Image (cartoon, rainbow, N blue to C red; front, side, top):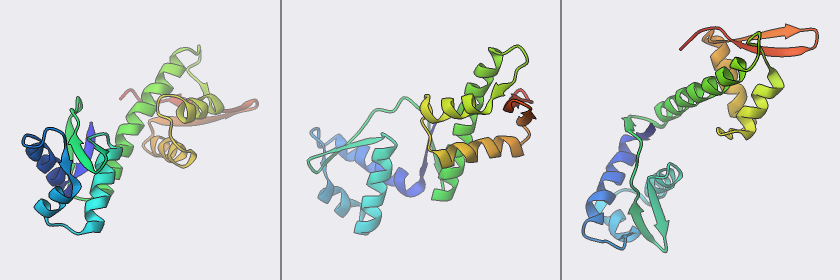
Length: 159
């Protein structure tokens, strides 16, 4: 699922609409005039849409990309970050669950969990990884266990 703000949704829908007329892509200037928003907000929204792989920008031309995922629209950027974190938590939990299934006791070393989150499919930053792990611990989905030979994680709830 891709989560975008209302402003991003308006811009994305306008790009899709105008793309019917401009097959080679829409000029940024035409789009900006059509939307009547400030330069700062316009650039910010385009960067966010490009980062989320909803549009592509080449030589000042913008094209909407086909999206295979569901798009969710929220009011603010804060809600976007919350929804993205929730989605990352689910993906991280699936990774941790897969790792724990390989172990007899269901415990996975903290270093293995962190390595898989940092360098695996999620490829998150250190800050984001720790935020995800702490959030899962606070929700009592994940439990940190200290043993003599190190720290381990255990999935406590089936979600």
